[in-house]
Image 1: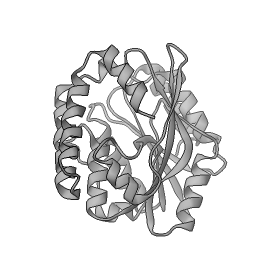
Image 2: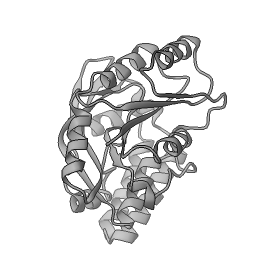
Image 3: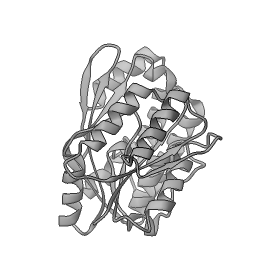
Image 4: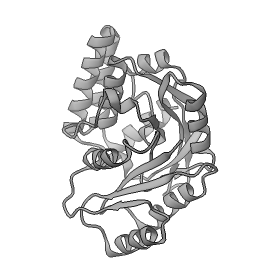
Length: 268
């Protein structure tokens, strides 16, 4: 049983947060090999730190690329390397924190449930400006997660542990999508790949006061709406599915303050 962790690092990541993220992986109760792709040129302090970690052996692989190509492109590069060699692939972002038992619990679950090809968990969001914390809960079982496609992203991408056979059916991320994770879950349910979510916090995720202002992206919002239309048509969510899709688009376009209030009110 071999376990890999894949993460992408890009120019807007910050060294203290990256260090904390990697330390949370080094300190896992079940160890895994870490594979990192540099998505474009990085600040010198981050580049030097990553090179030191790679030379020390704490990082198993460090890919370097001068051009920024995006998260999904970087993940595909890493998948090409790890899939032939590793049974399990763990997702992680460069500024999040995995709880110490995360990998042990996820791999243990997949070992005991051979029909499940990917398992996620809850996240705890913490606002670095205000100190506020919020646990974001997701459904547990496959059918519940499928139904949740109508309303929201059914799984937190940063919490996922894949079995390598997941990618026998869906060989890579769609690099044309800004919402590559939501697109991935739709494809998984279309192919009846069995998913699950552990009912506990596995990853702590940073937010900030400007988080919602940065998420006002018309192209991204339109893409989510049409993906939800696709899911509604495919899985028979009915008129409610289309209403949720359009409401989600409107939410994306709201001012940051209103978006923050609704987000805290309903995303629990």
